[in-house]
Length: 403
Ligand code: TRP
Ligand code: SF4
Image (cartoon, rainbow, N blue to C red; front, side):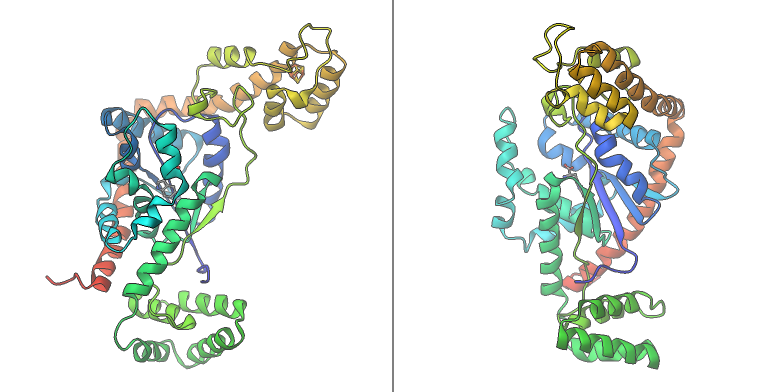
């Protein structure tokens, strides 16, 4: 299945608490880059938060706005990306319901996070219908925008895989309309003689020789046709491979290649390890947290030499320091030329320097919540326009458009 010529990007984040530097380095910086390269949809997925925090939904609504402020403060640009709140685009729920009709239970039960999270969050009862459906709701989030690329971390790959299978199954079940071949051939005639001939040639090259580049070129050619209906476009996409209409492109995870952001203890920074520095942590707390970080346990006294490879502070230098500073750490640590507090100082300064403008912008935004709400209103409307169109098509494909 080819990646369309101008792929859409969709991703979401659960509003379960304050964002931290791990979110910034691991996810948000990537979003900021992507927003200038693709049409992006970024959702605050409050319903996903509800699947685990259903006993205390009030906390979620507070986190929603804090999260929006964080996004804007780090430089997510509402002029470039569409920012929305999941529950404000109720079409996600309708699609989730419709997808549930043909989703085998086993697809959901075998997703690793299903059992893992139940084990990890023992204090919560996650033997619920909603929690089982978590990956399916995520699939709806993604395919409702016909997104092809989903920037996520390693832990979400299995979920994107479910979305892929769901898209494929939907196309298989509902893309096979009566008279597909004839309709597809008629659509070929509508794109003009030259384009039509080129399309057929590429289609043959793909079908007879499995030529993947022909597949991609044919898809790009179809994408570029502005005069034909959505239905014909989907027919032409599907007809390249011979299957039926392609209503949903199959989404693909776009893995973030950022190095893992280390937390205060050297493990990955994560709320569940209690080792985070929040995005807008106050400066005194940043100094204190870093100052208290454990170091190479062999450096008991200032005069003991150490080994940066055994020290969580070194991992922060790898994120924040220049080559020159890193050399200073390596030499100073191994020769006991510097003390651990000396070593931590540039890290503290770098974090504060990074947070300064973020904190400032957040303060400004908080003073004008009306504007923040306005940004979200617009994003929700834009997202909803697309979502409505998709649902219209979905209802039609499923035979539910009697009115
Ligand atoms: N499950 C994702 C997470 O925990 C959040 C999410 C919900 C998401 N819907 C999405 C991510 C759609 C990408 C696309 O991080
Ligand atoms: Fe860690 Fe730096 Fe101390 Fe070495 S000098 S143990 S790298 S904090």
